[in-house]
Amino acid sequence: MRKFLILLAMSAVVMSAPVQAKKTPELTGLELQQLQSHEFEGDKEMVFASVMSVLQDSGYRIQAADKDTGLITGIASTKSKVTYNLFIGFGRSKKSPIVSAFIENRAPGVSSVRLSFVMAKVKSSLYGSAPQDEEPIYDASVYKDAFEKIDQALFIRKGMAAPAPMTSTTATPVAAPASTTK
Image (cartoon, rainbow, N blue to C red):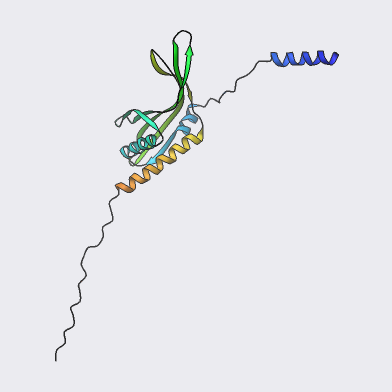
């Protein structure tokens, strides 16, 4: 009986202890900039087109893009599930990745790209839909993968834009047939 009471008391102490949610570590501004930014060799126009191409190839639907300011925003397509709320009735809910990109010239021939990925919970009802509860994505592999794809797209664009090497089209003289005289 005594063991039972000790066990009951210990479980009560454990149950009453505050539960702490798993928090993602907060990054400083400089750490966040280092994670989300990368420099590329190329002018702003070529880098902008490469970023657009990579985002579209990755399944993002471009919401807005402005080459002058260097801003691009996009949202990826995902499947939704049906929800019910007592006050507004049936609706849909889904989590969608959203990306924003900022491209700027750093120096002649060098451009900087800053990407920001978030996972947004999107709810819709009879009254419309809007992203809610955005959660930033701090996984370094996501950014590394995106920057590698942009680098590959930029490499291909540079190769396509480079002039073709000039080939020599000078005709080589054809030797005249030897004439025989008797």
